[in-house]
Image (cartoon, rainbow, N blue to C red):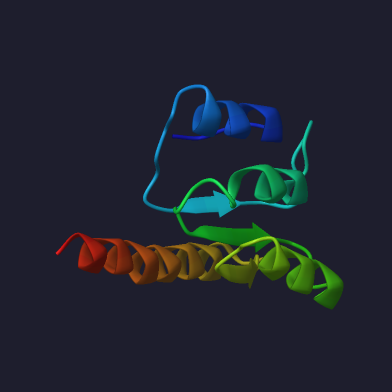
Amino acid sequence: MIAYDGEQALEFLTEFKFKPDVIFLDLNIPKFDGFQVLERSCATYSSPVIVLTSSSNPADNRRAFALGAREYIVKPTELDRYLKVVSDALTRWTADATRRLI
């Protein structure tokens, strides 16, 4: 499922009770930014949140982890590299979710 802004993401998680295995979250999204989504969702949901963002700012990195992000990935500019980091993250976190179910 894809949310196109922070408001929609929170709606999926709260009103519709959607429970994803993993959440990829950009910090720079409309309506509620990624930090606001983290603040409002991480305390309530156990799904790992992977921040996938263009920000290489160390303060953003620290804040994301402080708010409950499990991983922080700076988006590569090349498409092949981007697809690889997303695929690798999915492998890491969905494998972890599978292990929790066993």
